[in-house]
Figure 1 (cartoon, rainbow, N blue to C red):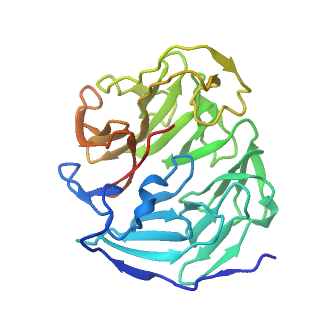
Figure 2 (cartoon, rainbow, N blue to C red):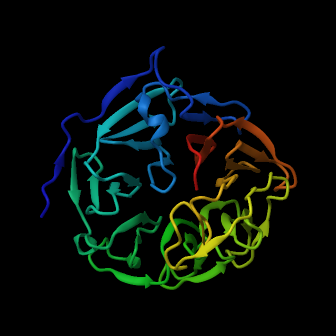
Figure 3 (tube, rainbow, N blue to C red):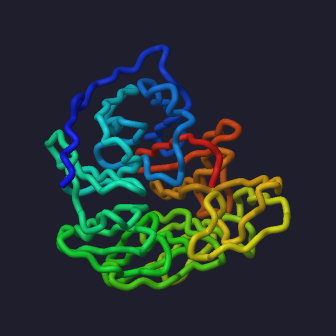
Length: 348
């Protein structure tokens, strides 16, 4: 068994200072009316280091967690001023996910680890899945575990003692759940389960991947890539994910310069492209990305290459409430009424 990765500098407190970093992480507690830059205390180099393809950030009742190299940084939800703590992170475990018993750490080529609440050590878990090339780790509110890999989606209802492959066709990304229904992103679109993840059906399939899913009041919101429309579509569902209605009419459309393409295997779309059609490297491509969708109160917020948009009329009109730096885009997380926005490089 792999040795535990001991914490040599556990929860070392970092205070903000006048020479700290800026324009990396923003926080709003008033429905997007105002935004506080809470980046001070993070190392300078993280501003160009975040990759949307890695699960490096999440928010919960305790605040925001994000990773950078060998550290996990945490900003408390109730902190009045920018204030970060840091926790040493296992080497080569680039992604994190929340768990009932503690934070999960994982990466494509390394075993899954977990740091149990109240302890200072990362321990290997789910050793039966060590060779599966892990993409995502998810634990539902009811304690069911899912691990998305290149070999399919694995599910455990007994704390990881045994696993079953419940969705062999395609990779699983983000999962959202509401009233006994689960929806998830996959490399075929948006999938849905009504039996705690034992069986899945494709509910949005338009020739591209699923980008984001989120639980909202009375249902779900999702972003997927539509090959026919050549853009990312934003939709909501209020019947348990059976049917979906677009809410992106007021958002600026994605712009793609037409160019020759070459087909690749739909099971493994080319990295850096939403569609199963791969743009040739010599083709100039200009794109606008919708990255994430959340709801706070009655308003929806969408992360975008232009910045953060808000709609108060379910998508008829959208207003830019926080512009992005040129060449950057925002990834959104929410906990209660607190919105977190992480500014990262502009890519799919």
